[in-house]
Image: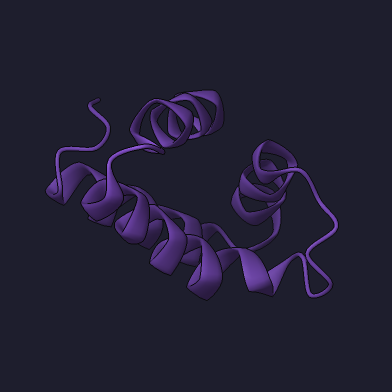
Length: 71
């Protein structure tokens, strides 16, 4: 799932509205695992899933609700 999120982020990066959704979610959730913002986005997503599963699941749900990723 982490790779799917990362690829969706890259695929949608040039679409301003979709990129904003990703950026807002990453600002909210990836800050839990990457305070200094030195991690690669993919590594941050994986780390979030391993250490903050509830927040990871919320992020995935939001991305699915916006049709940015699928099951």
